[in-house]
Image 1 (cartoon, rainbow, N blue to C red):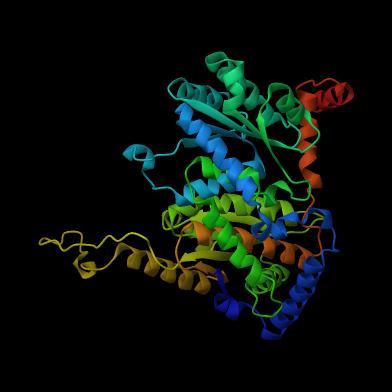
Image 2 (cartoon, rainbow, N blue to C red):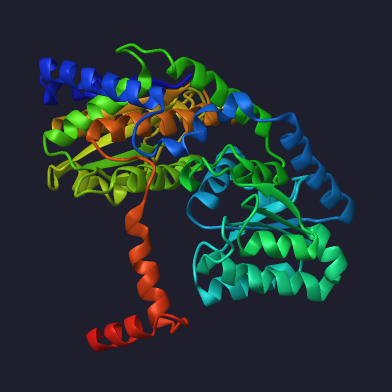
Length: 444
């Protein structure tokens, strides 16, 4: 189970004020659990771990089995934001770092598209597709979001040209609205297998829906283990008390924010967690960044970033706190050997595990940053596996709801994301945007 330790903040906060923020977080917990707060029509994620139907998992397995029979070795997952970050996170976290080079993987490689508008990226994706046996998962409620719609148009055409329209219907799966939208209409016309994006689950909370389940499963990873870990977290975090990890995290980060710490840096010491940070940044940034409020979510990958961002964190503007992802035990062992010449002066480490050195680097950095004025929160799991990744997913989702309600904002809307889209459509001269196009041209 996920644990939260806030001792690294003790020298920065008053104990009485922390207690008051715990009480605020408990009130926010009550709002979340009552399901009567702002945005309560988007709370379907809360019970996903315990309510994921077996027929959904069986349906996803059937897709994977059909692709295996076709010899598929490349799955292009098309989506943006919450429609790809959770799956990307899980695949990165659970993969062998060098799986591609070792070429030992039985399942297809999953790559992502529709999360950018880079022409080079799409051209190079098609270079890869030319060499591989391809299937596609397209994820969009509407089917008209520009980035994934552009990517899907190109990938769909490639699959149809290579395999024919009849086989394309087997190789393309859509995850979309149950009843409406362009992608749903196309799926019905073309005979694509479809899975539903639940109406009551927002994109950034959707990793435990088909949005995350099918791409993760297609890559050969343990979806049932992820769901089991999330279910354990769901049960543990439903307990109302001051030591509830979600309450502790929400209370401390809001207290630090009230003290002027407006930037939270999520820190990892395992490169497999880089995309957990990317997923977390959307979750918290889109949930809390509104009404002129919110903690800015950032991330670093240590120890690498200690040699780039470390100087700023240690001695730059004192506007930040760090939340450190701590993995207690490595699943692999590498022991440092002895060297007769000892030119690198490392014989004092002979016989020690590399992960021991990693943990000491983590501990030393946290102490240094406390001395430099950066409070430290620790979020820890026993090991990085499917079960604990599922626990982390649910913990951060639940804590996000508690934290945002503590802050006084609706965690489940995102009104600000539409502004860039309107400008982009106008500049692309989309029909219906003529007046906006003219107005923007005047500004350029």
